[in-house]
Length: 129
Image (cartoon, rainbow, N blue to C red; front, side, top):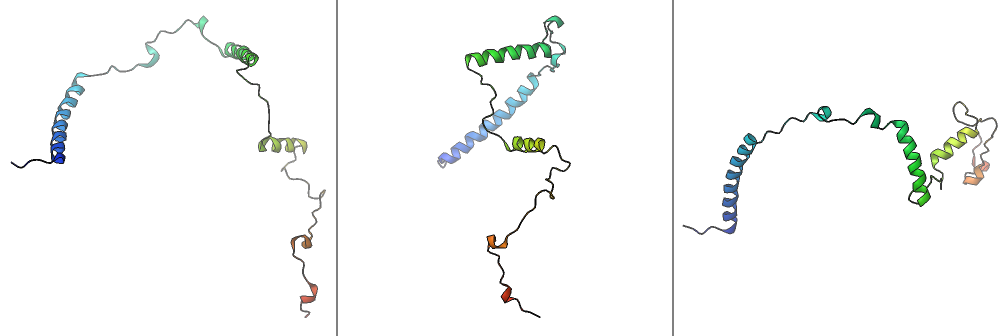
């Protein structure tokens, strides 16, 4: 018989292992049946007098935040830089909440100077018809 290469030996070992794995998986499926999870229906709940309410939590959080600020673990919300949204909303408030948010075009006149943009036209070049 011909001597098998390392690759052929490995392939034979893997084939044998796969055959054994299939049999083991079938046995495991038959043996293990997990009980159906029923959620919190079977869990015992604490009495209603000990439950946390939103008002109680808000009071605790305010007290906790004050303690953390005092010892330096939590910093107060300080606005260090203004965001674009903040600038926009402040300008809207300053405008008095105009309907469309645009400034009145009658109050500000836009003057266009073509010389500033290098668009001067020589009137001498125009052909007179």
